View 1 (cartoon, one colour):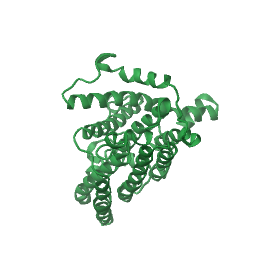
View 2 (cartoon, one colour; view 1 turned 60 degrees about the vertical axis):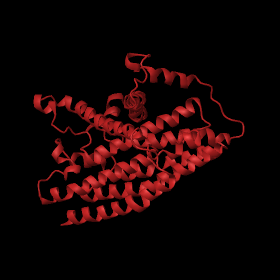
View 3 (tube, one colour; view 1 turned 90 degrees about the vertical axis):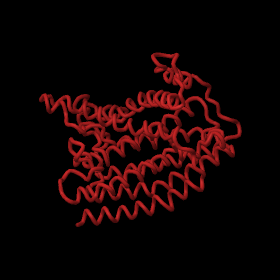
View 4 (cartoon, rainbow, N blue to C red; view 1 turned 120 degrees about the vertical axis):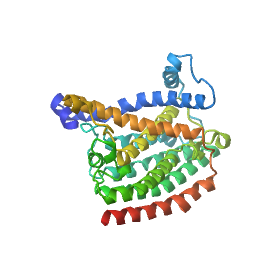
Length: 355
């Protein structure tokens, strides 16, 4: 994509800036729609209507809230560590935004086509932990500090089963590149990794149950990594007021909010890429059917976004279905169940792949 922009614009720096900003043009509208969707999902699950006044069925309510946030006074409490307090939301957002650089939105657009794309995502997402710890410590608030400590312990712990599941998929596909992994799953649902990959053989059918287990482990771990129910202890309103962002307001709070929803889509997109064919259509392309190749990238963007948004919807659904677990239960689920199961699953997938 960057090479195409350089040819089109003729300026390498400007092309790099535009290519880097394109994911932001996706994230901001997504967050606005996702916040509205979360309100509607929660409302209908509780037999309510949700926002209805601003726009059709309250569709513009989040836009109004966004303008309210950017106009709010930027308050920095007097007893906080001002430098760390101000830089923490920026670091959290940068860590979330950098993940999008390796996501293949279509076969023609990917920020960075890295051979080590999955390794890069695991590494760069760790920046978020540093930002959250910084926010909690700098706030000079016991609730913020406790929330940030919980979040750091939670994210670091659940990165282990996530990494093991990713390792099992790397072993199965033979690549760390997200774009190559997507291309191996071609354009129909029976070629997806969740259904044993592209080739029709005995291994394909033997590996399906273990792929399902790997997906469940990955999805549960991703819920904990983005602090979503039932693992939302870092922001537990009933215990910690608002967790690590208790002292934040205005645009600083909006950056935490933006990063959270960006993370929700990022982990959902990664799940769709490594298990569900990424940007590939489950039923083939209309562009191929009618001989219009220019249509295919738009179809791919539609399927990539649709799969990601579906898994985001499931996260919202679970919020109003499952109760919050205790901190000790959170660690028990990770260290006593997910990690041992993921290791055994990795070994079995490796044996089937080898044989």
